[in-house]
Image (cartoon, rainbow, N blue to C red):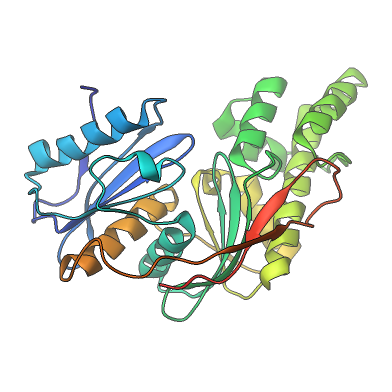
Amino acid sequence: MSEVDLVVESDVPIVALGIDAGSTTCKAVAVDADLRIVAWTLAAMSPHVENQTRDTVAAFRTDRGMGAEVPVFATGYGRKLVPAADRAITEITCHARGVFADTGMAGTLIDIGGQDSKVIRIGPTGSPIDFAMNDKCAAGTGRFLEHTAGRLGVELDDLGPTALSAPDAVRITSTCTVFAESEIISLVAHGETVDRILLGLHAGLVSRILAMARSVGLVPPLLLSGGVARNSAIVALLAEQSGLDVHMPSRPQLMGAYGAALLAAERAVTDPVAGPVPQVTTQECDACEEPAGRRGLFGAFRR
């Protein structure tokens, strides 16, 4: 059994648990009867998703006395590999619900995760009313930034400050991760500084995400969640290029798990396995002109 590091914020009873089995991290959030976060955990994602999530649920039961009757909802890439889950819910629905509950704002949510980026229009009740998603191309994701940081020898947490320290940006013309890496190597070989290269990369990434946002309608306020929300350059450039203030929830990385916990809590009073299933349709994503396939999902959700 793997060790699970729980952060306990309150000793009141847990009424629901949400697990976000993402591509790079595994998050779990427990809520009380007032839908407040009382305990949570965040860890690097193991390739053994079933074992890791099973151990995570067991830790909440052992360390926080969570009863067997407490409903568990799962979301994220590995949501169907969570043995203890009563239901698996899409990330779109969970992120929208979590961010709306935390901020009290409807509008346009941008979530940049390790493996994908999402733009979600949140309606006045906290439900998603439209969305676009890039999950077939690394450009515009946390993985793209992580890969770039490694190539340029910059710590991941220093990416944003380093980019913002540049006097101006080098224009990066490639929108594909593979081509962008080749372009970076060429720029370094020609003596360009790392800060100017990073500012150019961040500006290009934000430009692509905003193009995706405009495809579903960029309605303020602009909200940002996901692990990349910690990157100060992304926040600053989103505000600059969109002309909008950027609002973030109190715990940007936990919003998917929090939303799953909220949905589980709502169903706890009825039947945790009942209810309608979200409906989606798919279309080609036209946010960039790269020949490599970059697809997105567009459609309306129904809960």
